Image (cartoon, rainbow, N blue to C red; front, top):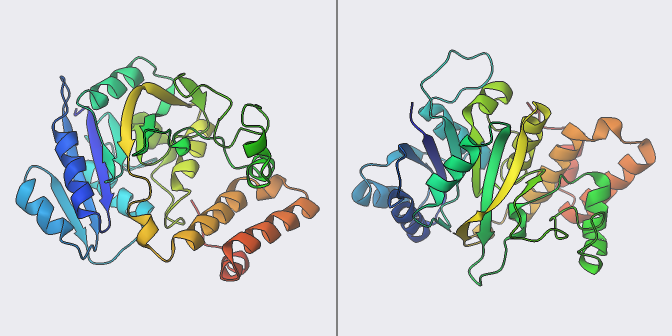
Length: 301
């Protein structure tokens, strides 16, 4: 059984993808892994670059941009990951979702592998992600966006009181960034998931298009009894939003993802006045196009 199956979903980040693959394939240590690039119909020569320079990488080229979770699922299924009820496949022991705008130090994969091998209770783990200026990518350790946690974050209370455990929950700003800690979720830019957890909860929810699917996956893994951990002993460079910032859909899809996540996990337990306030806030942020998602919700897993 292979140790690790890496899935990289790419959309028009050719040069960043090339650097990502160079660093991933230069990983050191005794581990066996496969690398799959799923290209979402890039028009910048990404697929041709992979074919030319990285023949050892398995390229799956989509004819259209099918979104981040669906494309990741294409790669995961290619590696043998199926989810509950499926016939057992010879999938790797772990899956790794990796963004093309990341750069790995030589020992990152092995150290994350050893961390999870030593903690069988951990279903999902992620490293410390740093931006190009050396600062922490705060999304790499997160609390779930419950209505109250989201209120603290977007009202500005989290910014005013970042060290307060109540107000700083959204980005865990009250915890030293160099401390390993159990969290609600890590980010899909580097999200390592145990095969046994995938076997229990299934693949990513394709109701999301981009954003939110990593939170949802972590939520379901935790519901299945596993823990999610942030491991800052491993540091990975992340060029934030290199692909999504080009997309005119990015802002809309972020708020659509938050609506789907809320509806799926929190709406049932939310009292009516608060529910109305949540929907109003999401419409204010996401714009009138979000009304279609409210009226005709996308089916979820």
